[in-house]
Image (tube, rainbow, N blue to C red; front, side, top):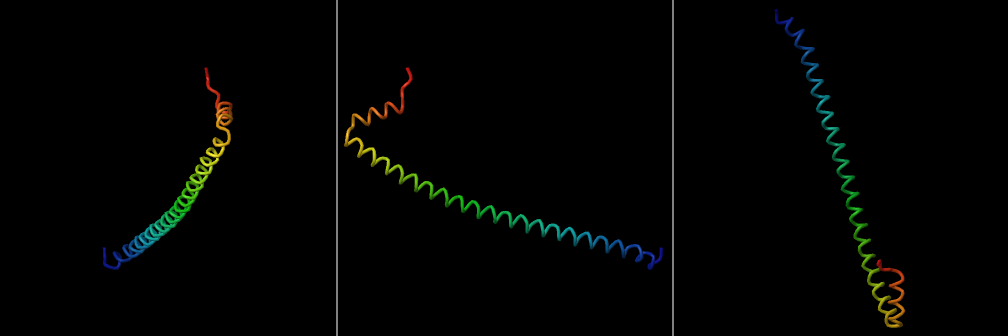
Length: 94
């Protein structure tokens, strides 16, 4: 095999290998970009949900405080009637 025959075989083969490497590197780069964008989107969603959860907890705390105050007002008005209402709302099983 002469040198020119060797290069005529190896030249296209090397081009094919180089093209394959470029395509594979492009695929990995694209995949990494897609995963990075997805991770950023998930982080933003998690941050938004954490903020919503904090807001819900604050609202619940205010509602519980208001309920405690309302119960205090009701019991100061007529504690016997409040006890009767609670028994009617939560019947006990025999």
